[in-house]
Amino acid sequence: MRVATIIVAAGQGTRLGGEVAKQYQLLGGEPVLTRAIKGALAAPQMDAVLVAIHPDAGALYEESIAPISDQRLLPPVHGGEQRSDTVRLALEALADDPPAAVLIHDAARPFASPALYAALAEQALKGDGAIAAEPVVDALWREADGLADTPAPRAGLWRAQTPQAFPFTTLLAAHRADREPALDDAEVFRRAGGTVHLVPGEPENFKITTAADMDRAARILEGAMSDIRLGHGFDVHRFCPGDHVWLCGVRIGHDQGLEGHSDADVGLHALTDAIYGAIGDGDIGQHFPPSDPQWKGAESHVFLAHAGERVAARGGRIANLDVTLLCERPKIGAHAAAMKARIGEILALEPGRISIKATTMERMGFVGREEGMGALATATVTLGRS
Ligand code: MG
Image 1 (cartoon, helix red, strand yellow):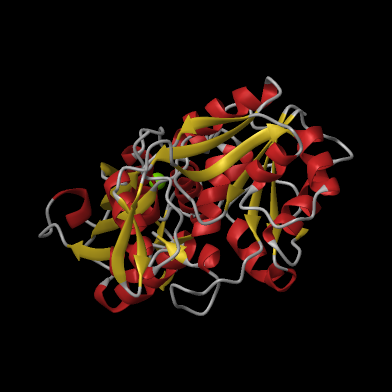
Image 2: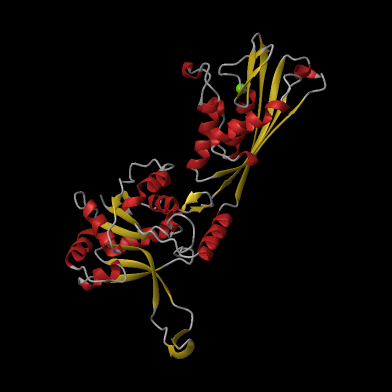
């Protein structure tokens, strides 16, 4: 193993308000910690990510990592009393299969870029320490009795961020030998005789501490999610003898059935294709070939859930879905709420983002003659800019 990241998430800080520690609070629908973990996993040449959590936060942690299925995310370790204890315990957990370089990162900094990880890891792989930091640009004043008293020179002052990167064995030895209070891992590493480079940090890599920071983070995320994609889908199925139809995931009694390889849910098929279309990811037939017997009689929620997973895998979110069913009968109105609820359940999407409508074809065409049904759908997806 060459490079590993330790994410320090053992704090219980609720300074910004809310029921749970800040790293578990939702930012754009996802815990801050989840975003920090995904950021570390996205860094080039990252071999392992280990999170140090508070012993009481096991359930919150499991919930946070539910959307991540990546073998490189190791089982969590419990942190200690002080931050430095937490880092030491996490380093010990990696000692059996030690990486060459380790990066230590705060859970509350969800926006560190892959390039920043790479620049820091490069120094550590050469045998030195490196910290992300930004030069101080504000005037500095020492205060006395609430008044500006003495100007302080800012020349040569840097504000440290994380990640901080170090050669693993040297940092572990330094933490084992040195239990004195320290600002951060750079201080522990320097006291052990190491050299620490200053690597230019990133303004967006700030630490979420207050409610205002959370708002700022949400605004950054909104900006980053402005890559908006629209997809449309269309499907038809022929009526056949039967006593029910499946429409948008709901079974509706009818004097005919719909013919198809799967359950012939024309609504879910159009919708699934709309989602695939929005992310340029083929169509149902490509992902679930009708020639493959395993999809014979398949329930169409499987297709829809798959499309939703493909969006999530791209770091995207479904903004809204709109379905129009084309049929003379059955009447859809009474079932629309159940359809919305079912689609929301399959995609973990609030029903307010889902629309179900229906129209007849005024007795014209194949729909008008009740030979079959059609469905049209659109899906809007927002993706992060990359
Ligand atoms: Mg179909």
